[in-house]
Image (tube, rainbow over all chains, first blue to last red; front, side, top):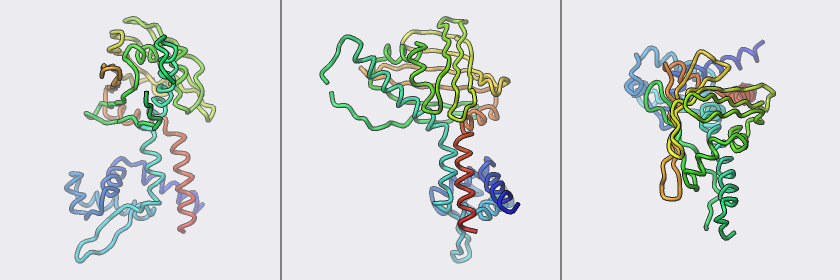
Amino acid sequence: MARAATTSDAFNAIAEPRRRELLELLAQQERSVTELVTLLGVAQPLVSKHLNVLRQVGLVDVREAGRLRMYRTNGPALKPVHDWAGQFERTWSQRFDRLDAVLRDMTDEDGDHTDD
Amino acid sequence: MTETTRSRRATVSTPSDTEILITREFDAEPHLVYRAWTTPELVARWWHGDHGSVTSIDIDLRVGGHWRYVMVANDGSEVAFHGDYREVVPDQRLVTTEVFEGAPDNEAVTTATFTDLGGRTRVEILVRHASRHARDMHLESGMESGLQRALELLEELTLTTA
């Protein structure tokens, strides 16, 4: 019961598009809420709400810097998110790697069979 | 010829709210890339992208002609796409409609451009969807297996840090 809830919370955290945008921005560098509000063009309460969700599942860390609270991604925790978001690009990269091999074979068969 | 065997990544960008642009360069002339793109036996060798095995490739390469690609993914599920050819300019340009049969209401229009770089070829695939929602669903497609792995990793993570 507790396990299932934890997993589904984490899933929900990365399934929400705004939260993925937040993760992208925080993966670049540590940022304050004010900065995130400006970059996303979204009201502060909403940004804070999403940040809280991400913190609860351990994807984002926070530290106090004077009067500011600075947020950043938790590297190891974020790996699955990268795996997920990069899937479309990876699919095409894998197709194209295969296509490279097909093209090499075609070039060989094309008559102008070159050196090695 | 010196040949680099390093794997080059495809560049994926979103030029507008409804579009996806995929770009990649190849060490072959446009007519070869075009042939590999439009010949069923050759498409069958690359289109699966290691996600499964291709079971059928139908290509009726003429304006108004129909195409359909089918693959059985590594998890056993069947994945099929189909559409029609709208523009066929050999070695240069193909415009097709494209429907993922798992989401048949979302038809996209795809323009593949083959640009001659002097012995090399730049391929650009511009996918235009009717809505941002459909575009985003497409970007997240094929993620089921990746998502499953992500969930497993997340579960491990949440268990070890609990």
